[in-house]
Length: 218
Image 1 (spheres, rainbow, N blue to C red):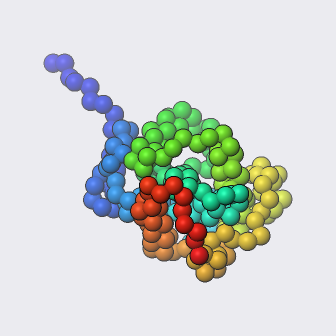
Image 2: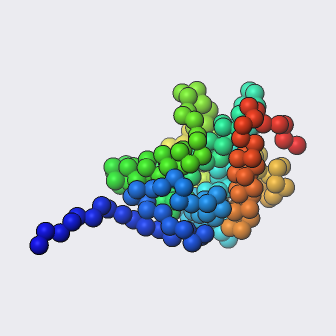
Image 3: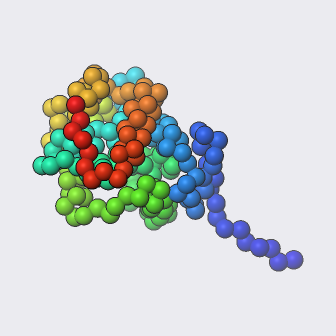
């Protein structure tokens, strides 16, 4: 008897009770809260931390967004801010933040799954494509946050950051999140705190969708 070959699938349960097939992601399979919870449970630096808890991708995403706000010569649009906030959102669905130097060793399968999830996020939130200039500015903020996290959160020395990790962006002296959230600089947030702050910011930006520019934040 001839059997019918089933398409590959990789189902994952979500905090809301919904599920997503990571091999064929439906952009509407998750809730905004699912994304916030999952990003708060995915850790940077392979989970390594000099603090009692690791740094979440949710906190990192908010830091990159805040740094882009500070460094931008003019206020970012709602779409630009939303894209910054969600720049690592596929990791919430994938379930881990792969160490950058490991990605080439894992090869095309990881890249293909990550690309599918990134496209699903872009469709779900109607994110615009990066321009070349925007991508450069985003990367600058992303790498500056990474250099700073490496020192203040993961325990690498400044010499190791440049000579072992190969990160040449200078370490930040000021935590971009400290003033906004009145938190201890460079200290990882508990998961519940990261969930709440990421979710609030995501809903704020989605609520502002349709305005051409954001009002000035206090």
